[in-house]
Amino acid sequence: MATVEPRRNMPEHFGIRIVSAEKDKVVAELDADERHLNNLGIVHGGAYMAFADDVGGTTAGLNKPADMSTTTVESKSNFFRATPPGRLTAVSVPLHVGRRTIVVQTSIYGPDGKLAALVTQTQLVVPRARKE
Image (cartoon, rainbow, N blue to C red; front, side):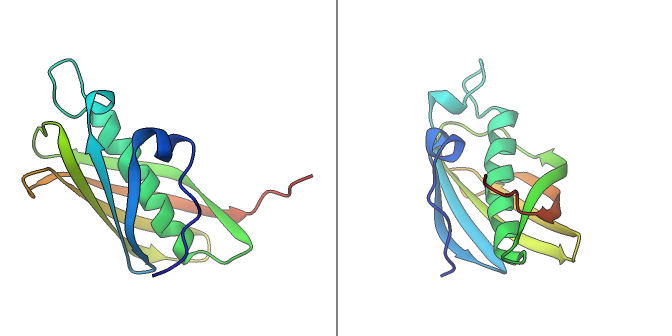
């Protein structure tokens, strides 16, 4: 399995766990609880998007040159079904790995194993910021 940096900040707060990470596929889990729900008691669309953005960013990070970084410049989502609280699983795969952009697709499955959301995002490949 590829090396993934420690999960901190938003991923840690959200409870996103990387299960496996390879250049061609990243699998992650999130146990959706009250933090992730809308006022109807189902998973909020923004929670799907945050989950997909983090996992997709991890996928892009495994496919970029070591001296570069990535940032999301475009994200498109399709929501297929409402999801109650419980374990969500994300599977992210690269669709295009270029010198300037990386496009990834992340499928999010609900606790019942059915596809709940599909997110496609474009990551811009940029020089890593210098620490001063």
